[in-house]
Image 1 (tube, rainbow, N blue to C red):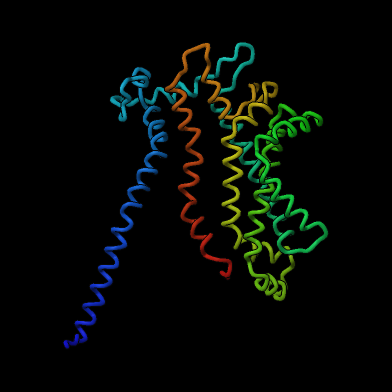
Image 2: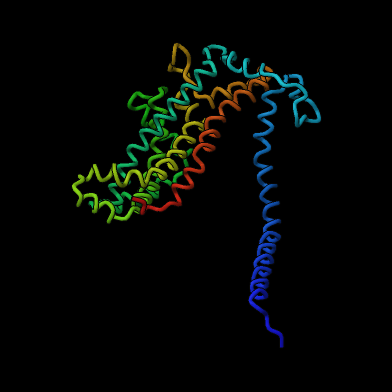
Length: 312
């Protein structure tokens, strides 16, 4: 019977580790290939929109489709900011004005919903009050209701108070379905903060409000960012609510109010040739804010969410 010396044991252990790593690598190869294929399928429309935004109009309908522009141009972007829609009776806003309206609506929805959700989540997570359980059930039920099904009752109520066809009405319409989700989500982040940390701050002389801002708020800030993403995307991308609630009555800078999503859809008109170049260029500009926002915060958001709630 042979025995292994100290170096032999270490060599066998090292070989076993290498074999294990190789097996993991080979085992993950099919999953990696599948992930790349799925990612390519999802990213291809974005890529095609990107290259078509820089193609001359003559190349946009080329068959077979060109996966790389033979000639690059910025004319589509210049035309996008010149196109004012083509309503026969109602003047349409410029793309820049529509982007401004979308930005105002999205930012106000995010700011208002986060402010309300922050204190509401603190109340349901830290205090016991009459109706607390009913409120939590109502928040869950509200999230089960389809977003589109709320349009008619919201429209009727806004019409009763005389706010229909205005930007404030659209903001209220977005806040209504956003609040249940943001309150419930932030409640989980607040509940994950140990009560002992808050009690220690109170013992050190902090008031309830001071303990919240100095202790709880920094710990739930990643959750605040995560929930604000949902509110921003809903208000920025939505078409149906913006089209129905804003209508054609209000004005901004003397022009008809439209969000950018409604403006983009207005370029597709059966009575005239669709300006595909301008449509792709404007769609790319419309998509950039959300993409840039995700690229900036994704690492910090993931790091903050996994750091835990025991940092001091």
